[in-house]
Length: 277
Image (cartoon, rainbow, N blue to C red; front, side):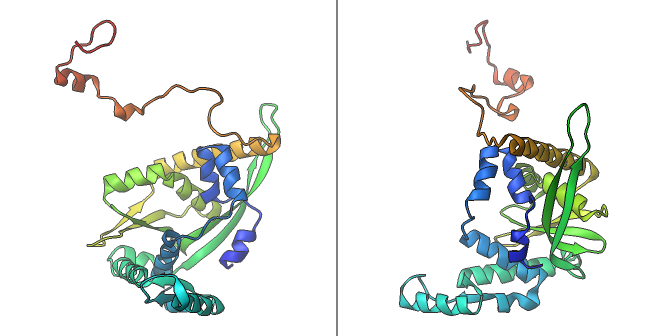
């Protein structure tokens, strides 16, 4: 199924559902406002094509060698590209896509994972919740578009500034990567291992493969099920609120505060009123 047909499917996908973790208003806005095609998105599509479908890359993308994307030269080039249904990349974007693809495909662990499978594979399923505790059940149509589906695993490609374990772990936590992994894995239905292939966007273009373990998959499953439950409630009430109503207290995350031992090390003495003496 091509991307246009996938987008027409009347079902919930992860990229929009995860916005509900921020607020229902952000989810609703994503449904109503078409997503702008940016340089970031175009480069992402180019890297994915170069990694997973290198034989189709030059048929889908074209390189613009001009210095600026305006004027008669650009207008003529854009018109020709549109007639051929090709996405335009700058010379730098073209170079970035090819060098990142080479880094992944030549990697001893990542390389074999991006061969022998199906790229951009569409999944469809229905998430059902049975009635319980006097609450009615519900069913929500779901969909997903897997980067690469092999007979023995699911592969998702991520470009990143830092593919090291600590940095990439933080990035995936912030991006709810565990929810994405559980969403695709459960939608595929065969409990396949799920791998993130992370490739850095700058030299030396380091590559690291990460497997999402059972504990994180369980957390991700709990997350997406909770979000689907919230979505059902929002649909039922036709209510799409933003953040908390009224005035909310300003709070810092726990990691922003020093531990008790750290406070002692600083030599600070806090009086009864909590002020440093």
